[in-house]
Image (spheres, rainbow, N blue to C red):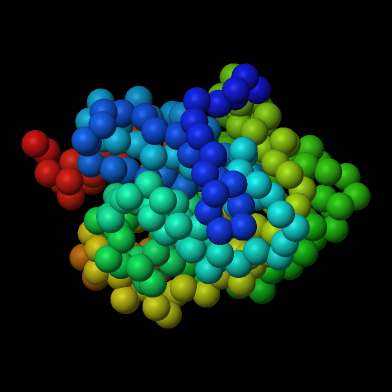
Length: 274
């Protein structure tokens, strides 16, 4: 994740300029991918090669992250959902196959609840439907530390929630790529976005989602444990649940082959293999 100019564009959505990029063949089924907290569209680098042979992959940096504007917060999940719909509108997309990890999966839940007509399917990866008091306390603690010590300190406190001890300890190229992306996240964007997720409360409305849905979790994820994936799966009728054993929050980076296999199989099923 070097800092050469990104291959993409910026477009005005409401009050912010939003970065997005396309990969894959024009005319393919559109897969819109939303990243996790403290990252950017580059978190999906490990998935694009598994999808872009057939799918028209749209990645974007949501509010406060990557190369999208980071206004002062607080933000809300309603803002994130509106931004996503606004980008679809500006790009002339009636429906997308939505793939979201962590916060991106929260945005996907909001879309499925409030804008079901805009999603052809949902892949909700390593995410949760509800913020509890422990998470609210976690966010408040991180804000205090962030204001005093910056993003690098937050990374050092967080990396083993995202990666297994062995992967984090080795600190290889993929680990370093995510770390670089994380520490350049604007402080205003991180604080604004975590303030939004601290107010997450979709659990009691998940039954409103009727789009084909894959719930993809990680078996050793301390950020969104398997019970959170089960809670989503149990409330979305007909959803499919896959738990990847032994992996943590960024399983898509640490074990892309294991992550990509059920994701691609799901997309091929809902989009039609032809």
